[in-house]
Length: 459
Picture 1: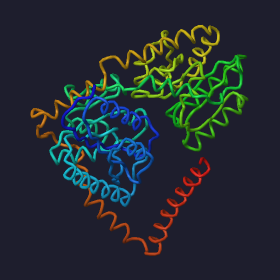
Picture 2 (picture 1 turned 120 degrees about the vertical axis):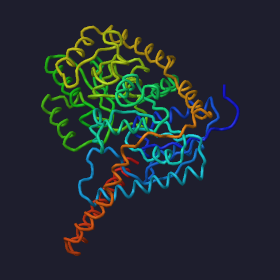
Picture 3 (picture 1 turned 45 degrees about the horizontal axis):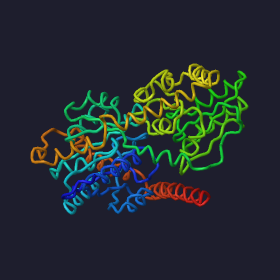
Picture 4 (picture 1 turned 60 degrees about the vertical axis):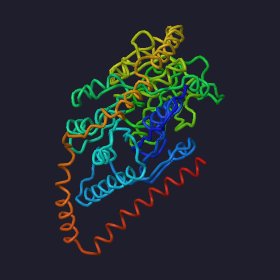
């Protein structure tokens, strides 16, 4: 039942503005859940250029602002003084713009989604507004991102800048305890609507699997080494070489060219082109997932694993890496099996168990469904976190932040970065400088042209 009363205005920074990843989808799931039961008015900050997430926000009747910024953890951090200076300029301007938004919108609370940028948290600090941080990833251990000031200082700042830090699994919360006051930490499982997931899974689609009597496996995620699709494909290859009929559907797009090349070489090596289907990004992956027997979570480390839960909700037997929060969801021998990341031999063995004992597929699938339902009914629910937030909005929660911010030491470097940039540009001729800038802009135009062409083809 929906609570009545004054609407709590929450300013939310979504670190990216494309609705493609688990972090963005889970953020909307949380606010959908809160909007059903509480009087809230979310206002979003989206990274410019604003992407597809704005459609979902506008559909819900919510407001958003576009702000340009970069991250304090990158896969490839800027190396030249020019790039560092330009990033620093964007981010200081972003903080100022977010402060302006806070003054204009007068939110009761500021919330940051994902650990990759602190600009809304810093703005809230300056404006003395309570801040909550949703941490949905390890950052470096799972996605290979490099923290600009190191993991320890970064995560300390996450705690210093927040009254409440929300992890998406108990495993991640335990990891954060090394750096953040335990009293500030809590866990929130993404509030999935299992009924809606099952409705999506019932959509009729053409099966990606070619053989009626095969073991049908699915892996979902962006095509990147950290997601481990190559390990799963190798396991399918080895099974077929050994005389077992198994095939796999890989759902997910993008990814480095060299990784895609390695995947193609592996498929060719094992002669399994008819048993590996690369279907790319899917608007409704659940319809394909439901056609599989076994769902593999092959990522080297997941803070939660949105697709792991989706596999469980539709009743798949599970196999996952024994790392991150995956063991929190897959109970070895009950609803699936675990293996060490990269241990293809063990992965092959676990898949072989299902081939040799097909009854286990149904048994573990039913246990997966029960586990999914238990997670949604347990103690890590969205309403519990919202009650904690309401506590922050009381008089007792309006405490002035006194903890130092590690990241402010970076600002001492900015004048020197500007000076280095001036010196560098003074050492090269105007002709070379113009050529350098033109080449950079041309590369940007080429990338945008390719993206536009791809969208046109898909459309």
